[in-house]
Image 1: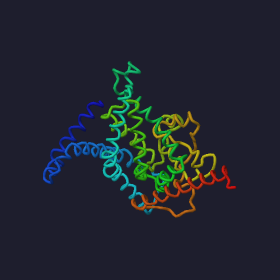
Image 2 (image 1 turned 90 degrees about the vertical axis):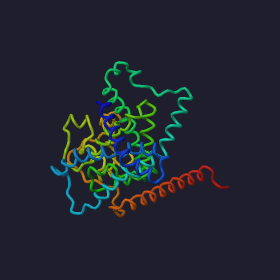
Image 3 (image 1 turned 30 degrees about the vertical axis):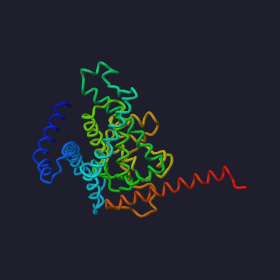
Image 4 (image 1 turned 180 degrees about the horizontal axis):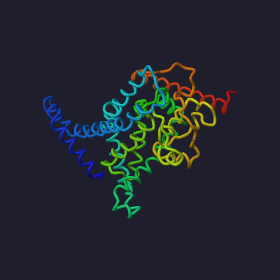
Length: 333
C-alpha cells in the first residue's frame, strides 16, 4: 500500500513537472535548476495532499458540532495563510534549499564514522514481511521524539518565546496547527528529520510519516466538541485532549506553561508514562497563559515580527540573569 501510494505521487510529480514547471524553466533559461525544481514539486505535492486530507476530514466536524463560534474570523483566515505558506511556500523552500544539503552532509559524516542508520527490519526481522507494521514502528519512535520536542518548546525560555505564537490563538481550528514562527517550524523540522535519519527512516517514506503526524495534528486542533471516550482518549490525541494543552487556565499550577500537560502529538501514552496527562471534562477556552498584554490576532508578518521581538526579549533576559549570577559569584572587591 505504501509503495503504491509513493508510486502514484511520483507519477503526479513527473506529470506536473513535465507539463508546467519544465517548460517555464526552459523559457527563462533556468534548466540548471531542473533537478532541484523537480524535488521541490514533490514537496509541494505532499503539502497539497496534507491540506486536502485535513480539510476533507476535519472541516465537516467543525460544521457539525463546533466547540466555539465567532463573529469575527479574521484570526482564522490568518491561520489559513500560515497553512499555505508553511506547507506549500516559504518553509518547504527553506527546508529544501538549506536543510537538505545539511542532512546529506550529516548522513555522509555518520557513515564515514562507521554509523549506518539501523533498519527496523534488521532489529526485528519478523517485520520484514510486514511493511505497514514497520511504518507504524517508525511513527511510534518518532512520536516519542516529538513529545520531548514539544516539552522543550515549553520549558526552554527562548524556544517558548517562539512557540508562544502558536498558543496566542483564541480561535483554534484545523488550520491552527501551522500557526508557528518560521524559526520554530525550521527547528521542529530539523528535530524530526534528525530523528528519522538516526532510526533509519527511508527518505521516500519520511513525507508519508509526516502526513500521518500532520493529519492527527490538524484533527487535534479542530474546533469540534469531540472526545474519544475513556479508552479512545488514551489511544490517539483528539480535539478534547489537545484543547486542554491550549487552555488559558494553564496559568494555574501545576499545569502552568513550564510544566504543562498533554504534550503528545499522536499517542497520549507518552503523557501517561511521563506524568503530564491531564484528563478533564469540557472544552476549555484557548489562548495565551497571561492575558494582560495586547492580543496579536491577525496578520502573518505581524506575528513573525512579534516572534522576533519575543525571542530578543528572552535572550536579553537570559543574558541578564547570567550576568547577575556571575556578579554574585565573583563580587567586585
